Length: 106
Image 1 (cartoon, one colour):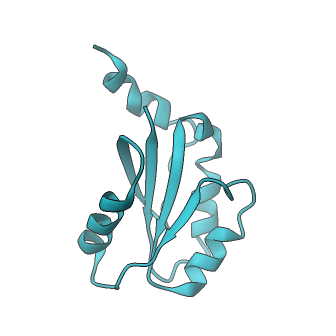
Image 2: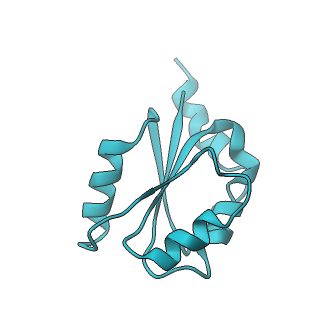
Image 3: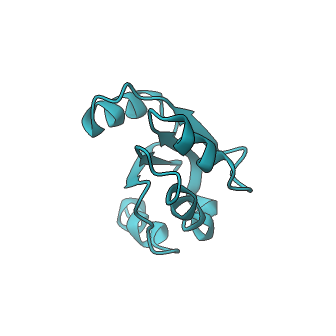
């Protein structure tokens, strides 16, 4: 079961790195991380985080709002499941496994 993490952000270069770091504990579940933002400074800050080079992709949205950005990302994601979060929010490390547990039951 592949998981795509969708991080929407706008002008959040100071917080997006922390949001990415918080995902590190859950690396085994994550197939890809899509950083969806229209601005270059947030993209640059996200790609400065070491260790995600093979999984992190940038999707430049048109700045038309979060619903538009998420629609674009869902069309481009490769995982079976999307976990959506924001560039100024960090999830509790280790929370993706329990989030997926009910989906693994038959």
